[in-house]
Amino acid sequence: MKQETSAALAPPQSYRVPFSGVGYRYSAEDKDAVMQAMDSSVTLTQGSNQVKFEEKFARFIGVPAAFATSSAAAAFELSAILMNLSPGDEVICPAHTYCASAYPFARHGVQMRWADINRDTFVVSVESVKSLISERTKAIIAVHLYGLPADLDQLREVANQANVLLIEDCAQSIGAKFGEAETGSVGDLAVYSFQSHKNISTLGEGGMLTVQNPELSKHVAGLRHNGHRPFVRSDSRYWYPAMSDVGFDIEGVWPHNFCMGEPQAAIGTVLLDHVAEINSKRRSRFLYSQEALSAYPELVFQTIPDGRTSSHHLLPFRYDGYNYGANNHDFMERLVQQHLIQPATQYYPLNRYELFAASGNGEADVPNTDEFFDNMVSLPFHVWMPDLDFRYVVESVAETAEHLRAHGGSWARKATQ
Ligand SMILES: Cc1ncc(COP(=O)(O)O)c(C=O)c1O
Image (cartoon, rainbow, N blue to C red; front, side, top):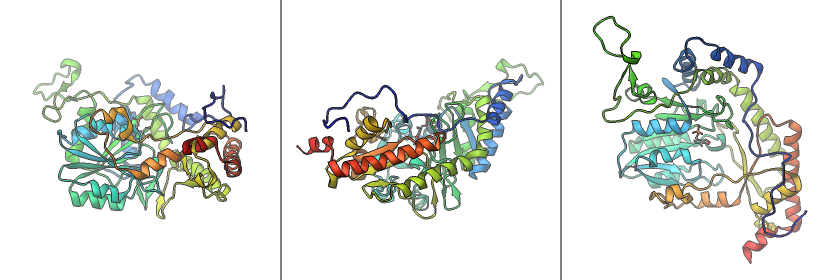
């Protein structure tokens, strides 16, 4: 080990295994679909590729309607608009998730009520959600974090009893299942992300909103695309201004432009055929890591309850190294300095961010969230990483656990001084 101090060392010039990386590498077939859409002489937006992608996506998930968007955050913003929120309303969301699961609701002036996670599954705790339901609750956000479905049976029941919407955040969970149900098919609304790091990406950005209720879904196309709708006209002229009217889909609610382009929709359509194969590669790597690291119970990985199928988007663990006088900073420092592997800590509890604290959303009683964030390590987990590199990551994790068992760590020593 090159150091024994708790002062952070400079990061290496380059990593053997960096944390970030695209979630998936495109094949020639994927690229062909993009080229074909690029060569279209008709349109690069709002065309047949979007229609195809949306129809195929809705069938894939098993929902009546899907709307392609520029991002999951945009899909969440559309959800918030559809909910007709007013100040004083409350939305329940786990504190342990990415900020975009929550800020589209906070933007509308609602009070965010932060739910805790389950200590074993790292996804939202149903008990915690129940304890936060009030007369003012408008929705529960079920985030399938790291690709593991939250308990959709119970959350559906809680939402039904409280007569509030259940919104699924499937940004990380494409292809994950609760029983036989795809994530996104149980909630009233569901949001997906195809951003660069996700299991499938529509060229860097992209999202999808699925909607069960036709009374809500009829508003989405206009709200997403500048309020456009056909002119209602009594003659045969088609050359009205810009060939379409604009208006309010919901009285008084201004539209956005949250559209996805045609080349993105074209590649999304092709990638849907590969979700099972991509997730299965991720699953075999997850299982390999569990087997290889089973001798280290201080590395607590996400428990996958029976009947749930994860999309294995990320590979985090809680490091319970206190018996060995070491903590997650010791773990990460050794991964970085000794093995040139770049880990990450995620997700910063949302209530701790200035964005939420300064907007009156800083209160939370989330001990499992705090414990997890303060002790967690997230490993690089790109699916295109060569097998050799992934084995190297797993071996380095084992070596680090052994080393800290024998020597403890300076960050933990400093923390107890
Ligand atoms: C859990 C979760 N929700 C929402 C989002 C937002 O997705 P997008 O970047 O497509 O807006 C992300 C993206 O990282 C995410 O991980």
